[in-house]
Length: 185
Image (cartoon, rainbow, N blue to C red; front, top):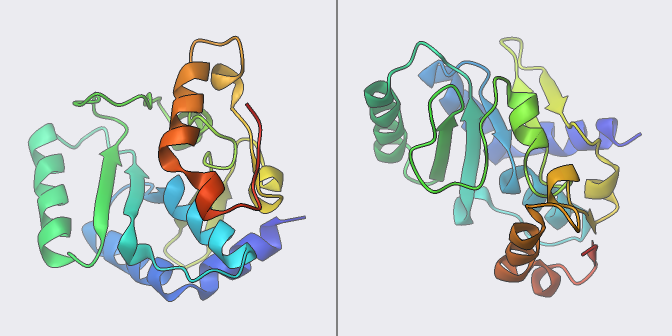
């Protein structure tokens, strides 16, 4: 139901197209723009707010088991130097996490996105060599388009991640920025 609207928003966004062009030149395997980048773009579009991807992190996850950590750092440096209009949050999920991240990397982009704290954040988009977009949404797009913030299974009330979910909701201050949201605790 929401797939067509999602693809319309993504494909018509000049910044998303520019970011994918940059990522294609970097030859990142399964490059996926995801998380807050996608969530905020959709929320801003739905609520009629100005949206610019130049003011927040660009969450890009990819899967390249052949890449060394040093090559990953070099790739990140190239992006930051040559495309500094964006704040890159680049993650090769095939590498072990090197910082205190609460996001766990799995053996696929879809499993990694499914482990994000909120269903509306567990969404990514890829672009193939023909410039066709593919949606990765383990929990669907309904919560995103209905402005619902709900925890994913590992973050529900009574689960080990629930406190982290509540902390994110409070720290990100989404209710102030988008008062239309319906937030489930």
